[in-house]
Image (tube, rainbow, N blue to C red):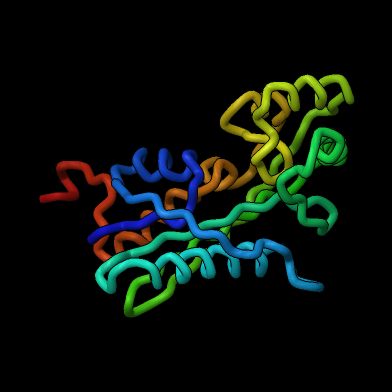
Amino acid sequence: MNLILASASPRRKALLEQIGVQCQVSPVDICEVPLAGEAASTYVERLAIEKARCCFKLGSEESVVLGADTTVVVDGVIMGKPEDQEDAIRTLLSLSGRTHQVITAVAVVTAEQTQSVVVETDVRFKSLTREECLAYWCTGEPADKAGSYGIQGYGAIFVEEIKGSYSAVVGLPLAETAAMLKQVDVPVWQSEQDKG
């Protein structure tokens, strides 16, 4: 099966490769504004499905398309990608010394079906100073990340505790993604025993 990743995220592509899945990358451009009153889990699931379906329409009927979306939530408020330096610093300070939720949705679309899953992970940050947040912004890492940080990069230094899926915080919950891909005959890494 030909897998297409409806995302430009190099992190998601690397996570798929980590479990032995090769894919073509074909990002799509959709409106990512939350609907009025939309819950964060509903929001990320809707975007993951929209991305996958939009990309599927552009491909062949034999394709399997994977779409995903990740958001950071604190006090019920969705924290998107920062607009600028001040927005990033404001976001990071709002996460300082607290636990927030990282919610990632994955959708797999074929000609026959659409599957989706939503995974929520709790992440606790140490207390941050404005100077630390500014120094982090200057690395360039926060600019394209939901919640203004990347747990797989320099941002890891802020994380005191994580409860849930680390790979979901990076952008793709691997256990759940592998299970969905197996259902549509996309092979993932297997041990020699599994192949027997």
